[in-house]
Image (cartoon, rainbow, N blue to C red):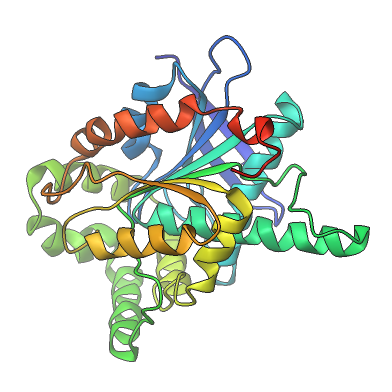
Length: 310
């Protein structure tokens, strides 16, 4: 597996990082992989390796994590994370051409970012349509052609309680005073070693100020609190794979609810391959979802063949 570092200057000036696996022969789709909280692109590498013969893969460090440093709290919003994904999609099409199909896959928190990115692209498409006096969805560089939502964490329609928001603010204060490794160690000790060790590695790689900014900016809001966000994402992409998780951090109900809402406008495949698999390692869940992911990627070109409407 050939991997090389990638860097992108986001539209707000933040330097974003990731790693790139080159496209196989032919007009393969581009796959953007989004990790969850307190992780880096490394979490997504087992999945990248499992599908890199079918797609050009870029595994991202979301802003605030890994090498994508951004210590400004105001720059950490769900809309800004979504725009980062669209910046990556634009960069793919600038390099490979406007017809390149872009698939966005996210794990847990990354699934929510993927949904918000598709919703933001849908909004941009309708703005463009209003200017052109047409209701057609976006066809420009920010287009997302398909989603793969793996073990979603956020349940649509559930707001963050004030008590939970206060706990998250207090946690951010503790991390700012004492450092992420010290503050999060008791939580890490409660996890199986297969989860704790990769998290320790990724937390140690994070810039402390960026991690604090991310905590402050994101943890007081459910990015899917308005279920219409998910419906609009389906309206934009028209094709999605949803793999529900099956533990407290990745409740099965979250994945099922996301699939139902997407299904109001999109062709959705619901794959229950993680049922009964609690707290899986990246290697375990990647092996489980590899089959459905490969099937989804093999549908490359289906949107254009059907005029963008499956």
